[in-house]
Length: 414
Length: 172
Image (cartoon, rainbow over all chains, first blue to last red; front, side):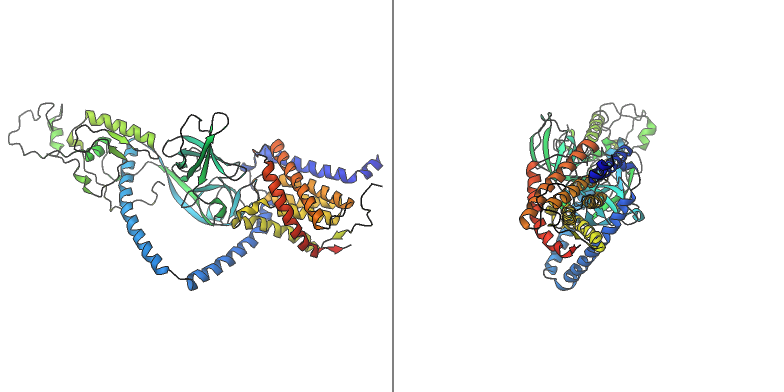
């Protein structure tokens, strides 16, 4: 017996070491590692490796900053001029978008919609990666000190990046990228409104799964987050469809080109606080869809003041400007004449609720353009349509008190 | 006595100083984590695996090779998102196998090093995928084309890297 152990000592040692590691793996899988604190070995390894990375990164930034800020200033004047022109262009666009946003908020408030607002983000620098094809993740230089916690969304200005997987210590965290095979992001095709799940492939590509093969998806279509994963707020840019082919199990194989270059990330934003609240409408009283639509309708010519008022105080039903079953007290509250579209004289906005026919046509029907809340807006538009048909009383049309110069709140929906 | 192509007396057995044994794997891990930020294709290389093969073959001790593989593999696992042990198990097997091979044949020249790394890279990936899919249930996919391409790239890198690391060898 002893000779057997002596003869196969190395082999037995190998089996023991392998068994211990398999056992440790089984324990981790059983415990669901994502819900438990980060293991010490991970913290030690990251602490051993990241100082070197941070040092190299600091040196690189120092040299690059010195070069770009003090020596290489060629073309700065031209760039400055271009940027100024860009700012002017964006200011004009901002006014237009502000009008659209205000209108969308009013419609959402009608439905009691709750939006997700990004209330707070933390900028972080990428200091490393897992360096493995089977595990696509990055390490950032912000940790628990900055309020980072597992499950937080990580984004850039261009689109989504991933989610925080682990917080190692006060200054280091690990982020799972959207092109990892174990990643899953709820996504939606912007124009066709088809929903799917975004996953990574072994080759590092990103695909949109669970879209039925009988649907029509065109390359170039934009993909945004659906909000269904409860990590990324709805409407964030994900990327564009680069290739569509028939897949297995009756689903399409949709390849997506991420909006963010995931292999060359330098700075990212961690969404540390998301608020869910109803959109704030900058109006004093309750606003109905008909009020908003009335602003788009042709103006009612102002009537000359009537000299003789019937003692009943109301006109016949069906007459322009009349209100069926109106009582005198209501009539007193009503303004004598209303120009519903008088306030539409501001900057011409691209309406998210537009009219199929031109505004001077009597029969107007609202149609909702695809946006992030298409279904909701359809409902809103639907209700607005019915109200337009049944309640065409001009006295309900209130002027839009939202002014473009009013500054929007910081936590506008993203 | 085991049959071997090269007797124990003929093959050189090397050792490494403690700083080299600890710092070189750490620097390799740091490189592996840092370089892909600028060179995304660098992820096809597995520097820690190359070190495991190099140390195991040079030391020619199965237990030492196995422990080297386990140590470096577990450290590498610490940087990934997956459970700790996937690389640990795969590199333990490679460390044992490489040191066993180092005992039997001389793998000091560039050609044999190329072939050894080519072979053990595929073994490593095979063990890794088997454990990841069968034990952990990770949805990984195997691609022969991709693995063979990576194996070739790693084997080429190994020839150059081993030549540099030879400077740290100390005769016993």
